[in-house]
Image (tube, rainbow, N blue to C red):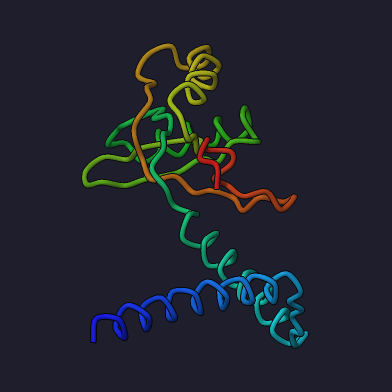
Length: 155
């Protein structure tokens, strides 16, 4: 009985090794015939995922400059008007938190970026201008780059 068990075990081991060699030979010559519709679906899925990602990343944590914080609405509006004329490339926000009117400007990812504008604004308003953390609005990239690359995260 032991001889039959040993010979059966040897038979299975040898047949397994032979089958494995045959499988390796057949894997070297594999050809894949794919339907072009599958490639089109994968491409469409990627486009949808990228568009969804860009929509979700539009509002992110960052920094803005707070130029003024006052309870005088007319003064706040005049400061906003001046900021719009002096810095036309920067987005300016008129925020009301009862009883104060705040004028904030810019959308900066880092504090260092905000400090560049801070120095320019302090020439007009030497006191009371400071950097505040805020939810900032991001523009989608124009040339197809991902926003993550600009933030230092590599996909």
